Image 1 (tube, helix red, strand yellow):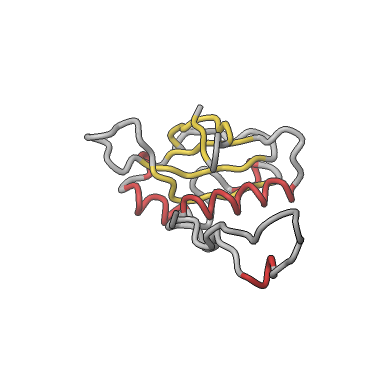
Image 2 (cartoon, helix red, strand yellow):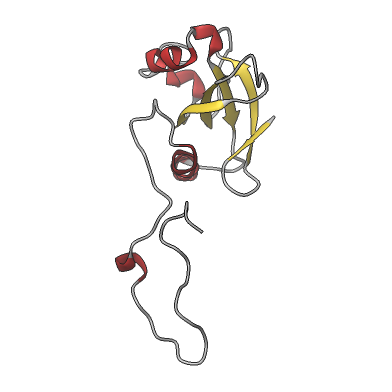
Length: 146
């Protein structure tokens, strides 16, 4: 098991070598990983893609997926590509999409065509005045700056 995401993370099954892995007949979020430093840190993985499927068997895994060539390039070989899956209990497609967006914002994987940011703009929250109950929002807009 590997935990991925913000805070305590989501409990993903794996990572497992993608080659030879048989996708189960379930809806799940999946993360593609590789060992960035297999010699120096053999237990550390880097996230290179995040996606979800209503049925993992229909996602053309292991190597029929449209981004599989990118995974192989990043890992150096198809045997260096790993997968971890999360079958979110009770999750529907919309829940899985939200989990994918969060993971994309956290890891910024290079093989994913979509990227998200963990920031906010003034027009999303607006200025407000709640006299005697609260002060103005003090959170920095950039999550990477404290």
